[in-house]
Image 1 (cartoon, rainbow, N blue to C red):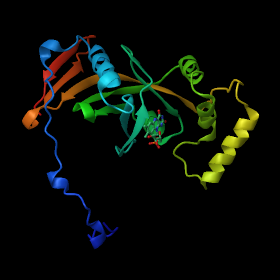
Image 2 (image 1 turned 180 degrees about the vertical axis):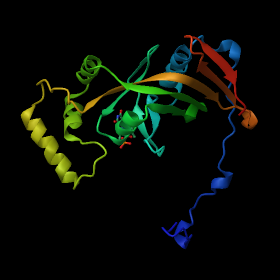
Image 3 (image 1 turned 60 degrees about the vertical axis):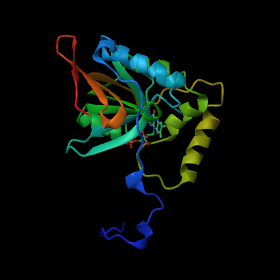
Length: 228
Ligand SMILES: Cc1cc2nc3c(=O)[nH]c(=O)nc-3n(C[C@H](O)[C@H](O)[C@H](O)COP(=O)(O)O)c2cc1C
């Protein structure tokens, strides 16, 4: 499509998108088999996704944020830890997502486990992880990724690929392999404390199962079934 919205011959695509659809034949998800907490349920599904889900990166999730004006944006990020305290990812604190979260900590995480006809959607509030937790994770990263965290001013415009490569090469010269790389002050984790977690299982005839846990404010969870 052109910028003025007119459709041109270049728009012709060799796909009949309207007829592209799959029938989901998976076993359902019932209230009786759900775990007591969404994190336990997530752990069960994650285990299945990571072992026989046919997924390249089961911990890849889409993180959606909104800025102070409510403008949304989404991007893929890797989940690096989860437990009863929440879902943790690491990023650059100067990035667009981090700036959004500073202005508006509301966030949504979406796990698109398409080969299993499943998705999990978490909504909640994000807060920075402590520096000790960030440092402990940073030290587990490969040397090159540690340098990359220093070399990138994530989400800002760069002049060229060469600028990035030069910045990386200078850092690599300063911190050779085997040497401890300090944790960049502009880099760290966010922990998303869930307020709701929806488990979606694709079923036949588009009559999917959707079971949603919502925090009841007293440390417990309410479970509701949503219409597909
Ligand atoms: C599979 C995959 C995994 C990614 N993992 C991360 C990650 O863990 N942390 C991160 O900051 N960016 C990650 N990215 C890059 C982000 O999608 C995004 O480009 C970057 O964080 C800048 O986003 P922002 O400008 O919206 O803040 C990943 C991208 C892909 C495709």
